[in-house]
Image (cartoon, rainbow, N blue to C red; front, side, top):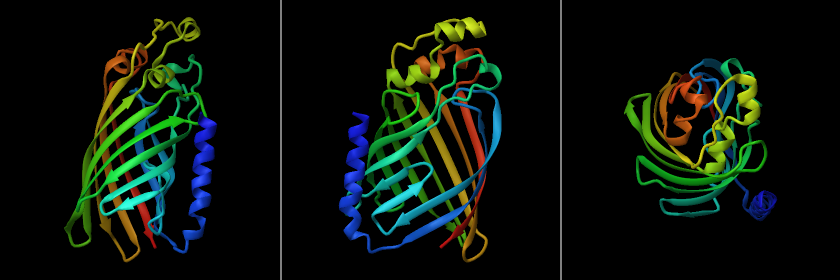
Length: 250
């Protein structure tokens, strides 16, 4: 099934090739963020990574949050796009150093978006193509963005994510081997869980082609993820993120 998704995405890209008489635009830069070591951790680390928010005309887009996608269908304020994204795993440093590693990997999915004015609403589903995570994940997002002063723009929005039973087990199970090595109690999630999020950002255009963005977000794990010893004993159900991005626009 995963192989068929990859082949479908490749075929759709080939069909779009004749229409690609357009050009890339957007921004590239560098981000520095303070975020949990892994989903459910109470230990935070600073990550410095390249950042990109690119569009190829109205056909393709590429950024960290939405992945690489193709706007297969666009009509007025609506768009439908297959995409390839990435889901992180768990490196198992610190409190979980005796646990088996969980490798992240590529995901394939479909996103439906509606953008009336300053608001954007999206519903997406994705499933892993590589790595150790299984199952599927559904995410509903709402976001508002507008200019608040000359040179300044701001945005914020909530999100609601459902991870299937298999996805939850991949990240929050304590297997017999993990329990024996770590002393944690065995734990087997019996169902999926919901994650609630809220994020915001503010951007200042410091020059014609340069901007600085401050961002922050918070998410809350619930259900079988929150009840896992990985979270209850060694982590925290409330997850926060803060960071800055320096971008060059073209």
